[in-house]
Length: 171
Ligand SMILES: [Zn+2]
Image 1 (cartoon, rainbow, N blue to C red):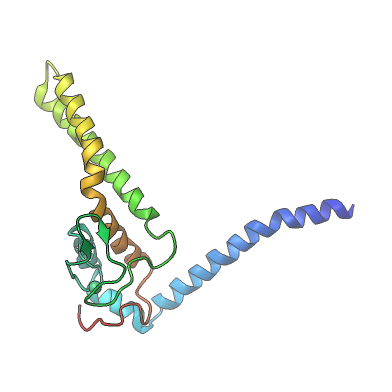
Image 2 (cartoon, rainbow, N blue to C red; image 1 turned 45 degrees about the vertical axis):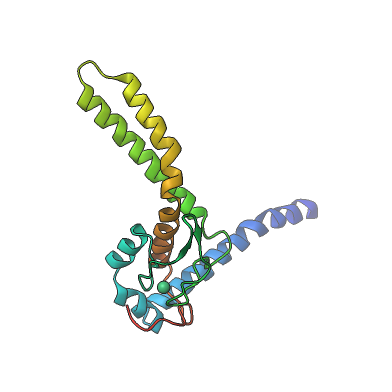
């Protein structure tokens, strides 16, 4: 039954390729973790510092704060260290995830606080209005932060590669 065999191999091809890509990515991370210059440069900055820079809308590599044009638009490269924020295509899909998580977390917090502080009558109108306000405004206000927070998380997951921040001179 050659047809069956062929279709099975075709079916297998896609996951096989995907597995190969994951393997390559894992090898890349492993080779970076095992002592190249790269990792020491990310480790040298420190995970806490990288995350704080992300949450304060700064470049995770050097801490530069002037990395936005206006409120929303992240520049392509950091003017101070040369780090390219979009390290790969689709980089900022993760930022949408960050924004969603932060918005839902804040909405839940607002609802819980609303229930706690208006108990035992429970001011439903107030609780609903504030939750809707959070849902509508926070994703906009947090948008630029979500990008730098994600850039920081990404930098922790995939250490800086040689030449990624060509102008970098210090922490
Ligand atoms: Zn920078």
